[in-house]
Image (tube, rainbow, N blue to C red):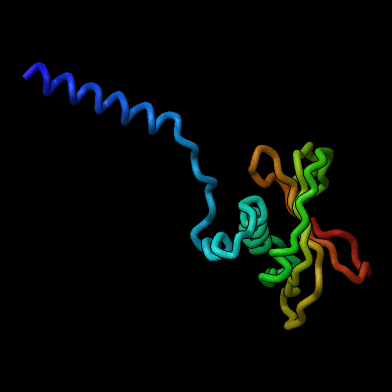
Amino acid sequence: MKSITALLGVFSLVWFCTSAFSQSQTDVPDDYAYLTRLHVRPTVINCIAELDRWIRTTSRYDMFLAPDRRVLKAKVNEDGGLFSGNNGSQTVESTVSMRAFARVRNRQSWMPVIAQCGVWHEHVVGVSLQQVDGQTPVVR
């Protein structure tokens, strides 16, 4: 009986140590799991998910589209600094920027935009969309 208790204790200790020191996987929203199969960086996936969430609450746009080709070419600038987005100016570790399309609310027109996200400790802290043609200011 003592050997069974000892074996159970050793097994529990090994299981606890392996689970405590294992690396956690980055959280990728389920709707965007297909992008991991395309080998898109988790930071870019989280940026797209946050842009989709944000676009539903803004008054100017009602839809956001980032083609796979543009997502694969997204630029991640690892230089820290200030990011001026929808939550005001914030300090960030990196900035994700990509070209995409946004549909203007109450119209059927899609316009090319530059989507940017500020990232701090692997979390998106701010987003912004800027029209490529430059006729209107940055929407935050």
